[in-house]
Amino acid sequence: MTRSVRRLALALLVALAPGVGAMAETIVLKADRYLDVGAGRMVEPAVIVVRDGIIAAINPAVVPEADQAIELPGMTLLPGLMDAHTHITADVSRGWQYAAVRRTAADYALVGAVNAARTLQAGFTTVRDLGAAHFADIAVAQAIESGLIPGPEIIAAGHGLGITGGHCDVTGFAPGVLETDWHYGVADGADEVAKALRYQVKHGARVVKLCATAGVMSHEASVGAQQLDAAELAAAVAEAGRHGLKVAAHAVGTEGIIAAAQAGVDSIEHASMLTPAAARLIRERGTDLVFTLYLYEAIDPAMLPPAMLAKGMAIRDVSRQSFQLAVQENLRIVFGTDAGVYPHGDNAREFATRVRLGQSPLEAIRSATLYASELLGVPDRGQLREGLRADLIAVPGDPLARIEALQSVGFVMKAGRIHRQP
Ligand SMILES: [Zn+2]
Image (cartoon, rainbow, N blue to C red):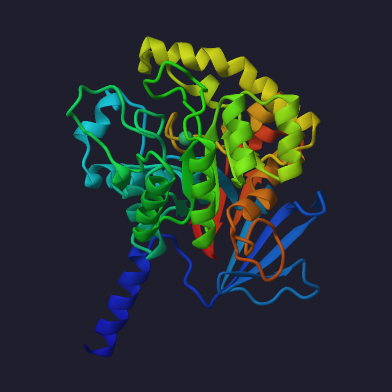
């Protein structure tokens, strides 16, 4: 290649790469203020220097010469948001119940690629994806990781693990249609749970999802009955520990919440029927709670069969009360949405729902940054601090005064690359 051709090829590569802003350059961001989530205060003004994908300096005495200077007047800079519960390859559109027998792995991955881009544009730079078919979630995660497509960093579970006929199984079809087994996460007994888990890890899972109880969007009669028993839960926690992976347990009913906490899972998802006794146990065990509450406002009732709609309605109010109990008891709450049940990209609407139910705006933001970084095992992000990964967003105005500002993200940077700007 001649030099000019090589230069042209390089320019083309840069132009095609997802997200603009090449490495090894200095980017200076200027906004009205930034949120120090650790200290819990706004700092004015905000001059943040990013170099090689890392936050190099915050409000330095001397601002270095910038390759790229970005002015964000009237805006607040925050750490990139994290969602601890998404289903990036799923969507609830007409006929969604038949996706399991109609969609191929490629179909799911393409849907996931589109949803990942929407999620990143909404300011979510890291998500934990809790359950998908055919390892499509892991394919999307790896395509993002390799720079093929834009999206948040995805910590994916592969198939969620649960009992035959349970919430993590595919239900609603005649016998013989899409029979599942441990490859798909359907496992009965401690040995099979361990085997199913090992298979997910073999194919790239970075977190383990368990269905400890029944749920809304599956065909069991109960909405919250315990499904995995104590021995199966314990086997999963022990096996995950040997792989250095954390465990997220879907648990709607009280018995399943208690059993999952006793087994030592890292987070309980939904936690719809929390009681004072369960709350005490969760405090003792230090279990994180990932509520998903906006979905009760967002889900289109016309999309659900009547029995599922009835199950959802049965736990809507008690889910809100459980969240309020957790806020009162000062339990550690991490941000999650179940996006996929409603359109990806609307994830930040969950913040306003939580604040309306009594959580402070600061705690709501901490749940999606500071606390999420611990639960997701990514200590290199979650705060705006020198030396951390440059995952930053900017929103108009002051989100502590108006939490809905998080729904209007105007600037997104992930690991130093700009994916959105005014
Ligand atoms: Zn879910």
